[in-house]
Length: 180
Image (tube, rainbow, N blue to C red; front, top):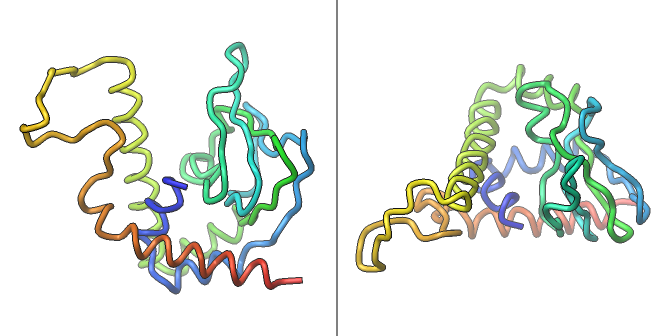
């Protein structure tokens, strides 16, 4: 859920409404590979319901995803194939936003593009910081009294918009669950 809060927190209400209307709901059966490592994808996905697992060749499962996770966003930014596979662990429901539709919106609406790319950059920055921390780089041994970010803590600019993001995601779910 953290990823959707970071990303939707950077977008406007109209941006989120566009994502919901431009996307299509897809049911993903348990065991189906939604994204395959190294193979190009044509959509970005938001997991609306269910659980998926992320795996890497030669390593295995590295994460479990739940409602609110966004998948395939990196391939929307740099057009390289996915760096991991994502498989349905349970029956799932996703919102698929085609790369073509997203590209048209990014080109047509500069404000949307700015907010979308800032949202992706903010999330990827947070992910990189977490990875660096887990690898033990830059461990300063800081105490809780110091003004440092704790592991798993969101940036203050992101925290300001988390309540908006949660409300936006809830509205998106209600809208999409009401569709056919």
